[in-house]
Length: 304
Ligand SMILES: O=c1[nH]c(=O)c2[nH]c(=O)[nH]c2[nH]1
Image (cartoon, rainbow, N blue to C red; front, top):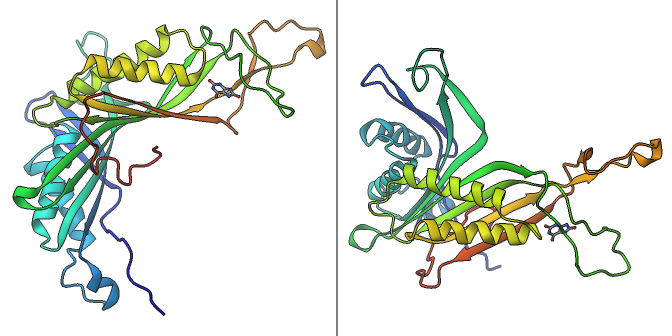
């Protein structure tokens, strides 16, 4: 019977690394969920139970925490690149690594009379998560690095300025056309940097996020598909260093509740917010001259 070892990788998932900068009385906090994965020739661990090529996942965890001090977290992207390169360097059999980081933002607690909020009191910001996936491939001089930045669970809604009509129908179609509906989604967006060298990632994140939000609000929507593509084009126009942006967007349906049964008018005022099923709309925008994505999207969740 011919059976051979297929693809494999290993690492430590979901290290909850919190780095606090406290060099001045005004502290800053970077709250990360860090996952590492190494790939390479680790066949003997699978076939022979031989661990001599395997740097334990426990050690990978320790490195994730140590680099939060030694390299720091100037941005989650820079931290992830340093961690991925360190791990490949530390493991002779590794041919590549992927480091995923999710960052939860903390805002300063507003305090009366204190400009810009409290020095060391923080409150978590919403459900939104900033994300980074860094993929490193090869060793030493041949090494390549891809950086995909993004966000998850950016929940947005517009209460008008959205329609859905003129769609294909068949014998099973019951959906009615609408010229005025609620459009809501919980957005996942990921953008690939053409060349991550020298990018000020924190500023860039704020700029892309602001562009996505303002485009969502100001663009009249004939479908979520059209809105996503408009958001993607706007993001790429905002920052020429972006090669492409990909979206995954659940259409969080808001159904007009039937109050006519009770003799009550409902002119787009009362809705049932259904949580499932939901339309799942996925789309991307790509710059014409973008480089080949290489391994940037390998094993990146929910994409295309
Ligand atoms: O924006 C939308 N796109 C669709 O493809 C779709 N399909 C559907 O039933 N409602 C919607 N809304």
